Image 1 (cartoon, rainbow, N blue to C red):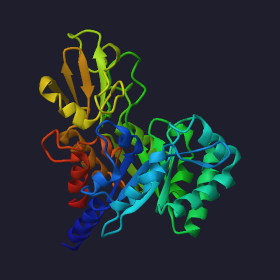
Image 2: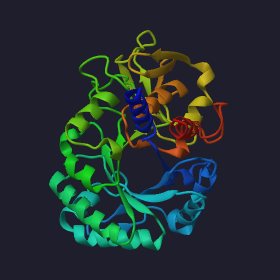
Image 3: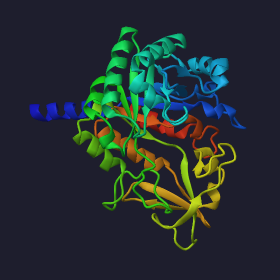
Image 4: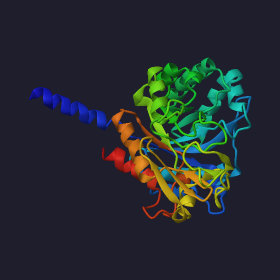
Length: 361
C-alpha cells in the first residue's frame, strides 16, 4: 500500500511540473488598421509576456525598430504586471533587424552587446531578455559562449534569460550549453520545411504519419536525445493559420499541389497568413477535415486551404506538454489569437485554454 501512495504522489508532482505560459506580443500589431496594443492583453493569464521585437546593430547596440515602442509601447507593456509573479521579457529579434546583425554582434561584439542588453532591460524595467536564434546563420560555439556571458551578466542585476530556437535545426545549437545557461528555451515547432515545395502542409503536426514529415514529437525527441532539459523547454504554439491556394479543387489532402500562398488577411496583411480572428470571420464558408493521427485539422473552401489550430488540436498539445514533463507552453503571439471573440468561445481563446490546462493540471 505504501508503494502505491508513493507512486501516486510522484505522478501528481510530474503532472503539475508544467507551469510556464509564455505569451508573445508583436509590436507590429499596434500599426494594424484595427490595432492590438499591450493594454488590450490585461485579461490574459500568462506567467511571462515577451515584447517582440527589438533589434541590434552589427556593432552590438540595441536598435529600436519602431517609434511606437518608446512613445508608448514599453510603458503600455508594463500594465501587464498584476498581483503575482508576472515576468516581462523583451525579444531581441533576428528576422526583423536587418538580416545578420544579431549574428555578427554575437560573433564580434559580444561583450559590448551583453552590457548593452543589461543596460536596456534595466532602463525599460524588463525582467529578462529572450535571444531569438531561429536561424542557422551563426556559429553554435559563439552562441553558447555568448549565452554563458549574458547569463552571468544578467544574474548580477537579477534578470532572466530565454532563448528562442527552431525545433527543426537540432544540429545548429550547442543544446547542452543552452539547457545549462538559459532559464527557458522556447521551442518553436511549426512551419516545418521538410515537405516538398509547392505543396500544402500541416502547420504543426503533433505526430509524424510518414517518415519524411517532421512533427512536434519527432523534433522534441531529437532535442531530448541531444541533451535538452525538459524543465527548460516551453512548447510554442501559434494561433494563426497557414494558408495556400490549391492547384486543383479536387486534390486537397496534405501534400497536394499548391500554386502559392493564400490571400492576405484584411488586418494582418500578410500573404499565406491569417490570424485566428481573421479566419473565424470566414470559417462558416469552409469545410473542416480533422487529421486525428497527426493531431491536426485543415479547412478548405474551393481552392483556398488553411491549416490552423482548433480547441481540440491545441488541447492535445497542452496535454502532450504535461505528459512529457516540459516546463510549459508559449503562444506566438497574443495579437493573432482571437482578440475580439470572433470565434464565439471567448477572447484570447488559445491563451485561456493554456491557462485551463496548465493551471488546473
